[in-house]
Image (cartoon, rainbow, N blue to C red; front, side):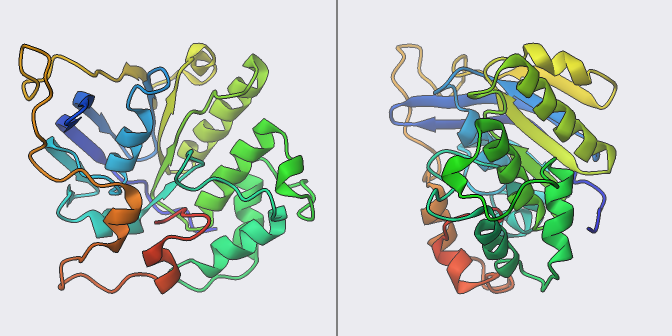
Length: 271
């Protein structure tokens, strides 16, 4: 599998506010290529929205954000081409009616560039699932195997930026540590990984100069939120992932990777 240099991500004051209130506010960080950056928040704390923003799939309402030199949201399409999503509720959940091999085949077919079956073999190995029987029904997988499969499907697209949501969700301490080590191994090969969690206790298993966090996600103290607590109207339209993919892009940009991806498929590792 091709291991391209990871993408550099730089955010200054990145904020997302809706009429219901702030989703996340004042996000400031820099992720160098080949590093693991972890954000921490409870459920409903803006974790998924932040990752969708960082990977070019949701528009912020304020701040400055650059990924690999591309400016978001203006160059979101280009950022989506170099980034992939791990599993994320309501975005790219696994289909329990499919077998593992069917998920892998679909991901390979949705790539922008043609690829041999070896790409899926390498992705499964990198995600720690080299020995998993691909005839296994998805519904029979353990939670750890499901999370690893989500990473493998994302790796099929050979991204430079991988975002992984809710790393600790549904996992015991030992399995949380296993997941953190797997993600850290990916960064050791040059990939940039940004992840979120609620419980960061096991993150200590991968502490080092190339790991930063946990960084708390804030949902207050934002200048766009009036002192009386009433959320201001968004400065830009806040759109979900499906609407973002379907809207008209800059005509100077290249065409979508596929009609299936443009409209949203079962697994949107690159969408």
